[in-house]
Length: 244
Image (cartoon, rainbow, N blue to C red; front, side, top):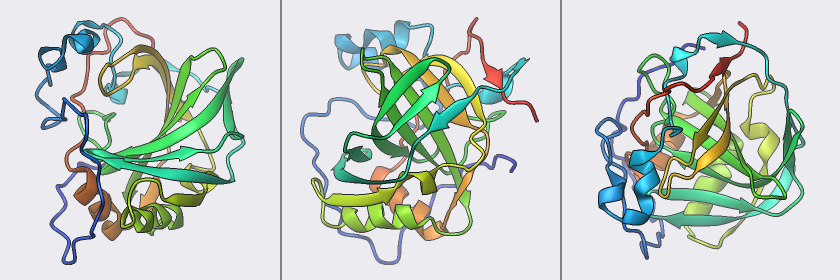
């Protein structure tokens, strides 16, 4: 499916009573285009502006084609909702994982951005889920899954319903229903997209999209607001795109 430009969602007719925790956050997303300059907010975020392996990037700039094998054992699992300023996240119980190459990554959490952070030739999808994993020795691996407007995703409904209760709400999800059945990916080495912008993150961005209803996209936008970091230079990094 072709990428689509993000259109700012209109206000919901009935605004959900989301319960957020605004404690302890000293940075914010900007307009998604202008450099955020987070190092000026806090010197501990120097990597955000000085690093040369930052994320997100424009995936349309890839010049290398290759199929990266990614295997997941996603399925039914319990999680706990975390909500805050510019944050909607579910922390998962241990047990699920992905394999990428020779590395084994344990699934830790999923969180969302509106619009999607990675771009395709300058365009962004309206919503993305980032499934964050870590190896036993602390290396991070992320699967990014874009959502376009279409049929509702039942798992997103569970998260949105839990948001009305607030942080700490238990959520039962089928994570396999939140990723494409054909998990072909763009692969590159990047960073966290939020402070402290630590590098060395193994990024896997799905080339196939999932669908979410207009109401689901609007609900998450209502909770998150504009929550995509500006696109970062690829530089000399290797970006592998899946074969068509």
